[in-house]
Amino acid sequence: MNSFFGTTHLFSSYTPEHILLLIAFLGYSVWFIRAAPQKSEEQQGKVLLGIAIVLSILQLSKIPLNLYTGTFDHTKDIPLHMCNFLPFVMIWVYLKKDRTTWATVFFWVVLGVAQANFTPSIQFSLFHYDAIRYWSVHLFLVLLAIYPAIVWGWQLTLKDVFRTVIALNVVATFMYFINLALGSNYLYIMGKPPGTTFFSILPEWPAYLLILEAIFVVWSLMVWGTFWLIQKRSIAREETIEV
Image (cartoon, rainbow, N blue to C red):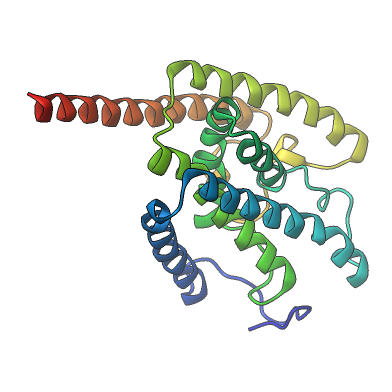
Protein backbone atom coordinates (compact mmCIF):
# COMPACT_ATOMS: atom_id res chain seq x y z
CA MET A 1 0.00 0.00 0.00
CA ASN A 2 1.37 3.41 -0.99
CA SER A 3 1.33 6.65 0.97
CA PHE A 4 -0.09 9.78 -0.67
CA PHE A 5 3.17 10.37 -2.55
CA GLY A 6 4.53 6.85 -2.28
CA THR A 7 5.45 5.02 -5.48
CA THR A 8 6.66 1.70 -4.10
CA HIS A 9 3.64 -0.41 -4.98
CA LEU A 10 2.55 -0.62 -8.61
CA PHE A 11 -1.06 -1.39 -9.51
CA SER A 12 -2.00 -4.72 -11.07
CA SER A 13 -5.40 -5.54 -12.55
CA TYR A 14 -7.63 -8.19 -10.98
CA THR A 15 -5.73 -8.24 -7.72
CA PRO A 16 -7.69 -8.09 -4.40
CA GLU A 17 -7.29 -4.28 -4.47
CA HIS A 18 -8.93 -4.02 -7.90
CA ILE A 19 -11.74 -6.47 -7.18
CA LEU A 20 -12.54 -4.98 -3.76
CA LEU A 21 -12.69 -1.50 -5.28
CA LEU A 22 -15.25 -2.62 -7.87
CA ILE A 23 -17.34 -4.55 -5.33
CA ALA A 24 -17.28 -1.69 -2.81
CA PHE A 25 -18.34 0.83 -5.43
CA LEU A 26 -21.13 -1.43 -6.69
CA GLY A 27 -22.46 -1.74 -3.15
CA TYR A 28 -22.22 2.01 -2.60
CA SER A 29 -24.01 2.74 -5.90
CA VAL A 30 -26.90 0.43 -5.00
CA TRP A 31 -27.25 2.12 -1.60
CA PHE A 32 -26.96 5.61 -3.14
CA ILE A 33 -29.64 4.97 -5.75
CA ARG A 34 -32.01 3.30 -3.27
CA ALA A 35 -31.63 6.23 -0.88
CA ALA A 36 -32.53 8.73 -3.63
CA PRO A 37 -36.33 8.80 -3.03
CA GLN A 38 -35.73 10.13 0.49
CA LYS A 39 -34.73 13.50 -1.02
CA SER A 40 -36.50 15.81 -3.45
CA GLU A 41 -35.32 15.84 -7.05
CA GLU A 42 -33.85 19.29 -6.49
CA GLN A 43 -31.83 18.02 -3.51
CA GLN A 44 -30.69 15.01 -5.51
CA GLY A 45 -29.50 17.32 -8.28
CA LYS A 46 -27.46 19.38 -5.82
CA VAL A 47 -25.77 16.27 -4.42
CA LEU A 48 -24.93 15.03 -7.92
CA LEU A 49 -23.68 18.48 -8.93
CA GLY A 50 -21.48 18.45 -5.83
CA ILE A 51 -20.02 15.09 -6.83
CA ALA A 52 -19.28 16.39 -10.34
CA ILE A 53 -17.53 19.45 -8.88
CA VAL A 54 -15.42 17.31 -6.52
CA LEU A 55 -14.42 15.04 -9.42
CA SER A 56 -13.43 18.08 -11.48
CA ILE A 57 -11.31 19.44 -8.63
CA LEU A 58 -9.63 16.05 -8.22
CA GLN A 59 -8.92 15.99 -11.94
CA LEU A 60 -7.43 19.49 -11.94
CA SER A 61 -5.36 18.70 -8.84
CA LYS A 62 -3.27 16.29 -10.88
CA ILE A 63 -1.45 19.20 -12.52
CA PRO A 64 -0.11 20.97 -9.39
CA LEU A 65 0.58 17.64 -7.64
CA ASN A 66 2.59 16.36 -10.60
CA LEU A 67 4.41 19.68 -10.79
CA TYR A 68 5.22 19.34 -7.07
CA THR A 69 6.59 15.82 -7.52
CA GLY A 70 8.43 16.77 -10.71
CA THR A 71 6.49 14.31 -12.86
CA PHE A 72 4.29 16.68 -14.87
CA ASP A 73 4.15 15.81 -18.55
CA HIS A 74 2.14 18.09 -20.84
CA THR A 75 1.55 15.17 -23.21
CA LYS A 76 -0.27 13.16 -20.53
CA ASP A 77 -1.42 15.31 -17.63
CA ILE A 78 -3.67 17.97 -19.19
CA PRO A 79 -7.30 16.86 -18.69
CA LEU A 80 -7.99 16.15 -22.35
CA HIS A 81 -8.63 12.41 -22.23
CA MET A 82 -12.34 11.55 -22.32
CA CYS A 83 -12.41 10.31 -18.72
CA ASN A 84 -10.59 13.48 -17.63
CA PHE A 85 -12.83 16.15 -19.17
CA LEU A 86 -16.19 14.43 -18.63
CA PRO A 87 -16.47 15.57 -14.97
CA PHE A 88 -16.62 19.15 -16.26
CA VAL A 89 -19.35 18.17 -18.72
CA MET A 90 -21.27 16.58 -15.86
CA ILE A 91 -21.19 19.87 -13.98
CA TRP A 92 -23.10 21.40 -16.88
CA VAL A 93 -25.50 18.43 -17.06
CA TYR A 94 -26.51 18.74 -13.42
CA LEU A 95 -26.31 22.52 -13.23
CA LYS A 96 -28.78 22.88 -16.11
CA LYS A 97 -30.42 19.43 -15.90
CA ASP A 98 -29.52 19.16 -19.59
CA ARG A 99 -30.91 15.87 -20.85
CA THR A 100 -29.51 16.35 -24.36
CA THR A 101 -25.91 16.73 -23.18
CA TRP A 102 -26.42 13.84 -20.74
CA ALA A 103 -27.66 11.56 -23.51
CA THR A 104 -24.75 12.56 -25.74
CA VAL A 105 -22.05 11.65 -23.22
CA PHE A 106 -23.96 8.74 -21.66
CA PHE A 107 -22.68 6.37 -24.32
CA TRP A 108 -19.11 7.64 -23.83
CA VAL A 109 -19.28 6.84 -20.13
CA VAL A 110 -20.99 3.45 -20.41
CA LEU A 111 -18.83 2.23 -23.30
CA GLY A 112 -15.57 4.03 -22.52
CA VAL A 113 -15.19 5.07 -18.91
CA ALA A 114 -16.83 1.89 -17.56
CA GLN A 115 -14.39 -0.19 -19.61
CA ALA A 116 -11.49 1.68 -18.01
CA ASN A 117 -12.61 0.42 -14.60
CA PHE A 118 -12.16 -3.19 -15.74
CA THR A 119 -8.93 -2.60 -17.67
CA PRO A 120 -7.38 0.29 -15.68
CA SER A 121 -4.31 2.15 -16.87
CA ILE A 122 -3.36 3.55 -13.46
CA GLN A 123 0.32 3.07 -12.59
CA PHE A 124 0.35 3.16 -8.79
CA SER A 125 -1.64 1.39 -6.11
CA LEU A 126 -3.70 3.12 -3.41
CA PHE A 127 -3.30 5.43 -1.60
CA HIS A 128 -1.12 7.30 -4.05
CA TYR A 129 -2.71 10.63 -5.00
CA ASP A 130 -3.08 9.68 -8.66
CA ALA A 131 -4.72 6.38 -7.75
CA ILE A 132 -7.24 8.27 -5.61
CA ARG A 133 -7.94 10.61 -8.52
CA TYR A 134 -8.17 7.82 -11.09
CA TRP A 135 -10.61 5.64 -9.20
CA SER A 136 -12.75 8.51 -7.93
CA VAL A 137 -13.19 9.95 -11.42
CA HIS A 138 -13.69 6.70 -13.31
CA LEU A 139 -16.05 5.06 -10.82
CA PHE A 140 -18.21 8.06 -9.94
CA LEU A 141 -18.57 9.12 -13.57
CA VAL A 142 -20.45 5.87 -14.13
CA LEU A 143 -22.77 6.67 -11.21
CA LEU A 144 -23.36 10.21 -12.52
CA ALA A 145 -24.23 8.82 -15.95
CA ILE A 146 -26.66 6.08 -14.93
CA TYR A 147 -28.40 7.97 -12.12
CA PRO A 148 -30.81 10.07 -14.25
CA ALA A 149 -31.81 6.99 -16.23
CA ILE A 150 -32.54 4.84 -13.19
CA VAL A 151 -33.95 7.41 -10.76
CA TRP A 152 -35.34 10.23 -12.90
CA GLY A 153 -36.45 8.11 -15.83
CA TRP A 154 -34.50 10.00 -18.47
CA GLN A 155 -34.79 8.12 -21.75
CA LEU A 156 -32.45 7.59 -24.69
CA THR A 157 -33.66 8.02 -28.27
CA LEU A 158 -32.28 6.85 -31.59
CA LYS A 159 -31.47 10.49 -32.31
CA ASP A 160 -29.16 10.43 -29.28
CA VAL A 161 -27.13 7.64 -30.90
CA PHE A 162 -26.51 9.73 -34.01
CA ARG A 163 -25.78 12.78 -31.87
CA THR A 164 -23.21 10.98 -29.72
CA VAL A 165 -21.37 9.58 -32.76
CA ILE A 166 -21.23 12.98 -34.46
CA ALA A 167 -20.11 14.69 -31.24
CA LEU A 168 -17.39 12.09 -30.69
CA ASN A 169 -16.01 12.64 -34.18
CA VAL A 170 -16.04 16.42 -33.73
CA VAL A 171 -14.15 16.11 -30.43
CA ALA A 172 -11.73 13.59 -31.95
CA THR A 173 -10.99 15.89 -34.90
CA PHE A 174 -10.35 18.80 -32.57
CA MET A 175 -8.15 16.63 -30.36
CA TYR A 176 -6.16 15.38 -33.35
CA PHE A 177 -4.81 18.87 -34.01
CA ILE A 178 -4.09 19.39 -30.31
CA ASN A 179 -2.11 16.15 -30.33
CA LEU A 180 -0.13 17.31 -33.36
CA ALA A 181 0.73 20.56 -31.59
CA LEU A 182 1.66 18.94 -28.27
CA GLY A 183 3.14 15.70 -29.52
CA SER A 184 0.62 13.90 -27.33
CA ASN A 185 -1.89 11.08 -27.65
CA TYR A 186 -4.98 12.47 -25.92
CA LEU A 187 -8.13 10.48 -26.57
CA TYR A 188 -5.75 7.80 -27.92
CA ILE A 189 -6.20 9.11 -31.43
CA MET A 190 -2.53 8.82 -32.37
CA GLY A 191 -2.04 5.31 -30.99
CA LYS A 192 -3.31 2.69 -28.55
CA PRO A 193 -3.21 3.35 -24.81
CA PRO A 194 -0.35 1.74 -22.88
CA GLY A 195 -0.78 -1.53 -21.03
CA THR A 196 -3.30 -4.30 -21.53
CA THR A 197 -6.69 -2.82 -22.32
CA PHE A 198 -9.62 -3.50 -24.62
CA PHE A 199 -7.67 -1.69 -27.34
CA SER A 200 -4.96 -4.36 -27.22
CA ILE A 201 -7.03 -6.81 -29.28
CA LEU A 202 -7.51 -4.30 -32.11
CA PRO A 203 -5.14 -3.84 -35.08
CA GLU A 204 -2.56 -1.08 -35.10
CA TRP A 205 -3.14 2.61 -35.86
CA PRO A 206 -4.82 3.95 -37.92
CA ALA A 207 -6.95 0.88 -38.71
CA TYR A 208 -7.93 0.47 -35.08
CA LEU A 209 -9.64 3.87 -35.11
CA LEU A 210 -12.03 2.80 -37.86
CA ILE A 211 -12.79 -0.52 -36.16
CA LEU A 212 -13.19 1.23 -32.81
CA GLU A 213 -15.71 3.65 -34.29
CA ALA A 214 -17.68 0.81 -35.88
CA ILE A 215 -17.72 -0.98 -32.51
CA PHE A 216 -18.83 2.22 -30.79
CA VAL A 217 -21.74 2.65 -33.23
CA VAL A 218 -22.87 -0.97 -32.81
CA TRP A 219 -22.56 -0.88 -29.02
CA SER A 220 -24.38 2.46 -28.83
CA LEU A 221 -27.25 0.99 -30.83
CA MET A 222 -27.28 -2.00 -28.48
CA VAL A 223 -27.42 0.27 -25.42
CA TRP A 224 -30.23 2.31 -26.97
CA GLY A 225 -32.05 -0.90 -27.95
CA THR A 226 -31.83 -2.16 -24.37
CA PHE A 227 -33.31 1.09 -23.07
CA TRP A 228 -36.05 0.94 -25.72
CA LEU A 229 -37.01 -2.60 -24.71
CA ILE A 230 -37.08 -1.70 -21.01
CA GLN A 231 -39.22 1.34 -21.72
CA LYS A 232 -41.59 -0.67 -23.93
CA ARG A 233 -42.05 -3.36 -21.30
CA SER A 234 -42.57 -0.74 -18.60
CA ILE A 235 -45.32 0.94 -20.63
CA ALA A 236 -46.96 -2.43 -21.37
CA ARG A 237 -46.86 -3.33 -17.65
CA GLU A 238 -48.49 -0.02 -16.69
CA GLU A 239 -51.23 -0.51 -19.28
CA THR A 240 -51.90 -4.01 -17.95
CA ILE A 241 -52.18 -2.71 -14.37
CA GLU A 242 -54.61 0.03 -15.46
CA VAL A 243 -56.82 -2.52 -17.24
